[in-house]
Length: 219
View 1 (spheres, rainbow, N blue to C red):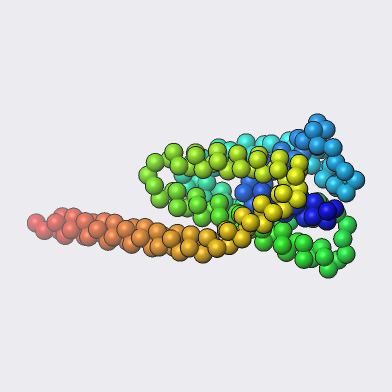
View 2 (cartoon, one colour):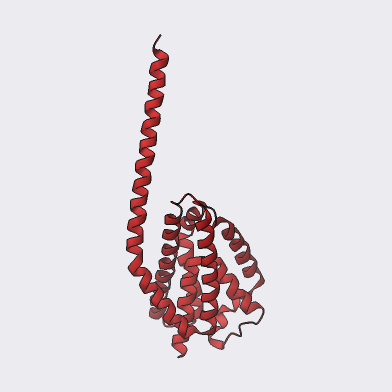
């Protein structure tokens, strides 16, 4: 049971970090800082998340993400910047939760944690790309709020019922692995359509410029 709880906490932190790294760190740190979460000896390495400077940094960065996440296309740009940051952050959090382990287990744990964080990040980024093809901004706001609620609920489950979290997050990762290939095929087709429209606009613009130039050359 001890190992399952550690795995549940590690997988939860990695998965939620892929969705929203700064909110995950901030929520976990707040629970630690104000003793709402009484860390067992095996989780003492997470105590650093409750440090004042960690909370300030995570809070400021989350405030920036809170705004950027709700602006069409700016959210996708933000996701692109965090393609490396979220998996690395998720891996670090997971390794903190796992604590001291044999070197070979640390490598395996880091690979699995990074894979989980990259999976949830890819799902988030892909969903935002699809949403950005719609002309209205409401879907971005709804998705952003839903993601924040998911992180809050996931954090509570992960910290209160880590074994349950292990089962839930494992199932979510498996489902995402099945869905992501189809999602990215849709995204690729959407970009091909947009590229075709952009080329058509450029060609029409060049023709109009050429026609005006020709008309001006005629006496």
